[in-house]
Length: 323
Length: 273
Image (cartoon, rainbow over all chains, first blue to last red):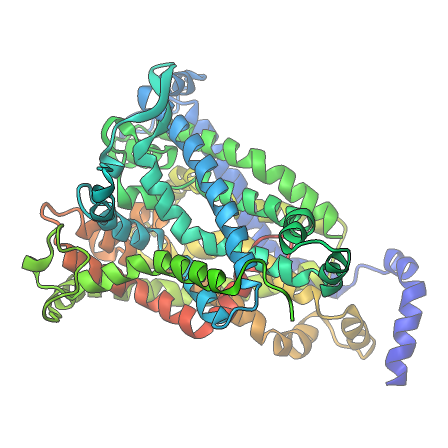
């Protein structure tokens, strides 16, 4: 016991100096050797392949046979003038905003609900969490059946005078012309958002719940002592304390939503007039069903850039924050 | 002791109402899968089956069994290999830090956020070149490689909780890189391995994009086969639902029995953990 204590106190003062002077031993070489294969794999298969995809995206390879001749930005220009891709950008934007907003609101609500020391709390928690263990494909298949037009949920809504066509609806809410498409909220997207929210809300609940549990009880007690109502306590004190978690939830949900593919592919596909199409589905179909490799690569690069806008600052800031 | 936000009964009503929303798809899935085909009409969707009919499970099982087996052959080696690789990387990046280790770690982490569409075209060309295209080992390889960032992150965070003093005193006692890993880190890593293995198992089992682009017909994992069920001209919804349940069963069981570890993995995967 004593020796341990000695080394810890010694370390506290001496370590910064010792570390700098410590020799690069054989063990350090061994450590590097164990890490090296992973580093090489990541650099080849992530960064190298991204570069390769970038190269394909400026080539003329739009058939089965690779054509590496330089095409400049031709494929990108084509995409941004393409009706389908413009629809994809609209759908991704609408989907991402609705999806994240719903996940955050519902996630906070359910986390606070679970924090009220209800009886059967762990049962409720498991009910909110379990969809996360499912595949997006399973979710897509089930919700495709649930939202089947003229049935499913509609049997409840019909008496109310609502007759939804759900994911087959080609209406665009609040639409106005923009480029080649009608910009607005495609009704069909809402069905997909509901399915995605059903699956992913548990993630936000888990994160908010962890955050709530980390807030010391004294904070609540002090607020109550000062005469705050429960509503004020949550609205003015607890929710602001949870803001860093909201940032994490937004970033994680945004990167899931920007690259979403399987849920939509399994549930609705591109839809009539591409009302539920997204870049992930377009990329898959044009590349692997249509052999337009250069166009597919260009879509992939646009997807990567849209994710990177969120992820790169997040990674840099969490590195600085997390010592 | 804590006072409730609203009146207690209202809280329970809300919790039950939300539970109904979350369980509704499960109810429809189970009810539909147990119906004979002639009861699977749009109008009767919400009704319980008049008699329990297991035939759609038999049909779904016939169609999906080979792909279910493919998924097992994929998920077991891929999970074990990526957990092992993650443990080694996490060990090096937390206990044998060198100059630039944190930057390197951030560069590795980026790999878990990329849309895989952005590496898919070269990846398939590469797998064709080395003869692993349309093979289960090819898929195992892909999941091990692209699993490196998340498994490394989880183990690095996990090992950060093991005090450096233990490593230092082991070094003073003459233990080296391998011995410290073998006799100090590994025995303390059981929970870490459980969390990472459950996470990788769930993700690889559920994965679709790599599966659908790298394999064809008889090599396809379960999720692709499930998606293909609805590709046929007449969709038999009872078979479809039975298939969805079969495909979801392994990860659901893992969640039911080891859910605590699943949630820990989820929180660890959100970088700041």
